[in-house]
Length: 398
Length: 172
Image (cartoon, rainbow over the protein chains, first blue to last red):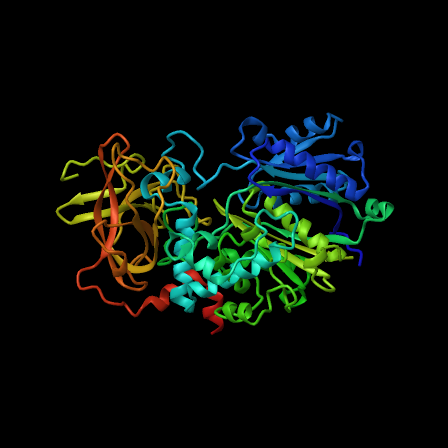
């Protein structure tokens, strides 16, 4: 398959996730060098560096593309840095892809790296009453897990999901993560351990919520022609979608204090989260039935079940059945989070969407080792973050 | 405020408190009527098809159904206040869909309401709430609490669309 709108994933690399407490640039360098080596591309051959920003690491974090280029040694290539909350990595990949498709670059290095403080994410410092992220903490004490708790409770009320269903997601993802050398949490977990872990935001317990982690991921994207010269043209980015919500928003999505009123205006046909994968499927000219695997943003176990329905793996209300049938486990019909997911990694924000693409790439190359999804040819990665961000990326074999 | 408690930082112009009781104030677009809560601090309208710049304060209705709820068992980071010499006390959070406006508004649950009293779909009402700042000063916020004689609304299926999708309803 050769399409004018596809770019090649020539190389991928990661720094293992953990709580190492080193500078984020150090992780980024490890991932970048690994991706360049994987691609067989020299640093001097890179024509653009796109860095996913981190907002918790001072000025270098805001100019991540520059910080990483300086660390690798200035070689003159332009840089771009971008931030889109949890979709940061997807925006970085989209920027790289756009440059390649426009003919402005043949080889682009995309890197996301983060050093994350332990515990709840907190808003950036200072008194800022015009910042929704500040307001939700200041007035309500509404942490991310609190929003997740609301969504999980809602799912229980509407779908009849139980804590045991949610725990089964953790058991599944921990098993996959135990096979992944880049995962932070590599121990298998049983249902009882999940259900005995401390309650954080009812109904979600500690082991139902993803941790915050350090880590880095990098991808070398190239034009089709360049990839053929490298003989690294097996895996292609088929689509990247990153739509924003449409008015009226139907859900009180974080960090906002309210949804929009539905009294006067009718909502769009698809929810925001449903629109993410849908847009990517449309752009790639395929549908959920064509998928062999998916990486979904399991900020919580309950949210993974929401994604099954929102990306079309099953009808609304059937996610628990899909899970318990084993369809989404390794060896199942449509494995979800074969990497182990956020459940096994924890969240390193600007790296996470890039890490999803690393996993899909290894899977599509048949290089995922013990967690290999047999015969994988097409995968999707989805995520959602604060402030109306979200993305879906379709990756396919050539 | 009738009891003299000042509005919490960032909430100036969010509350109405008078003979008609306590209510949240939305911003209402003077061109198209679209509501915003919190009221916008920047001129404009949430409806992308409206070019209105002006808003007028509009009291929101004070009753709705409990869309969902959760709690906080661990102290959140600042800027959530930590009053001096006070232990962290867990609190519940509610998301209530106003029946009239079909708008979901988050708030803490009044501290005297036991967790086990909450059930998705029950009728909730707005109440004035009090937060104590890190310097020990009382601040006005809003709370949700089960309405007197609350019972399941039975109409929560309508809120279903707010969580899932209108497409699903349309194809049903």
